[in-house]
Length: 479
Image (cartoon, rainbow, N blue to C red; front, side):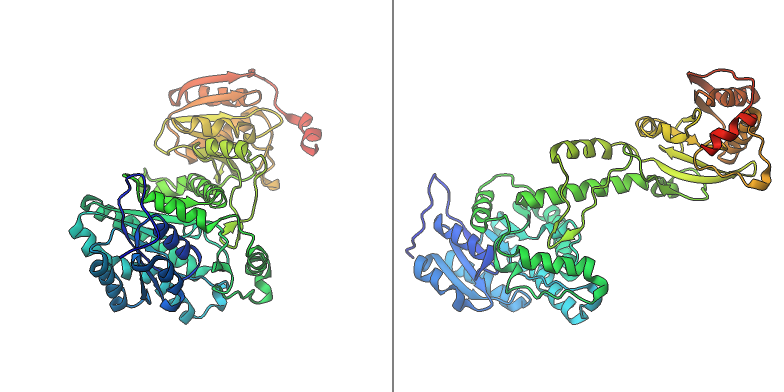
């Protein structure tokens, strides 16, 4: 069993099984393993496409016909590895394809075909290899997923569904087989110069209604093909090295484009979870109802838009000054989210901002003149890790709505009366007051009305104004 490759630096020769080895990344992996002296069972639907590997590496490689959706064919491929080389150390589940087409225009038959190959093919071949790796007490399975297994690339519904399935399946598998000495690594490539986006892919832009989404993705894919930043030979070198590590990662992004797209997508997911935390926590917290709950928009501190538009397999949007933006986004994503609400109180539709857990100590923020609760947009999330922070817009300010027929008298007494009704509507029994400018005389009146409710008062530029807003308010309101 002579061969061209050689294993150096004391590395032990391993036995590999690579699916989809006739071209693309699978071919590069097979060649990289063989060139380093490893033994490879290279599989393809048509093993005629593997003849040149046999010519070059002789008995170091076995070419096997494999349809990954066939359990019998998968068992046979694994048997060839055991019978020819005595063991199976590394399985690379690489075979797969992905067409571009709107979900609406993708037939159920096409959905099934892609999921059969890209998901069930991985499951079938993995299950065929597991008994032998379990008996060996060792093995490493590389699941070639995609950055599309983390984000939803437009136009690739069946492919993404399958790759997300591969990732979930592989996470569960890793937990089950780790005690048996078997390692699992999910590999998430970005754009590579392979045939994946060429002849292997059917591209259909779809009807005109999808031109700005799937159509744009299809055009991008055609233009981008052959210009992808990833070199499959370098990727293969990385993966061969990965199999020599004692503790390889569960996941590995391949390519800087994959890294940045996944990073932005993951930050956006964390931010989304924070934005809707109030709704998330309500079923498991003290009973409380809101008339509306919506994440705050437009605050540079509590919302940064890093959600990417998928083009091909990657996000197309580019963040300028990326390192600074990413650092700021990470910092912001760790802050509790601010949500905005409305509630009826004293005949007024009071708009308010809120953050923090509903059962935490309350800080009640009252803004100054002539702004609104938006003045606290940076302060609110920084207090919300310890407190439930509530900041209403006073009547006549911001987004709080006073019906015209209400005949509202804009005085501090009236503002205090409305805010008292607001605290009652929210069932606030104890709170600390943080008051600023005109918020102070309003807040002081709350404290005088119910001193037993107020745990502390923090006053910033606050004065005990006697006069109301009165007629002087009219020109300011018009402004």
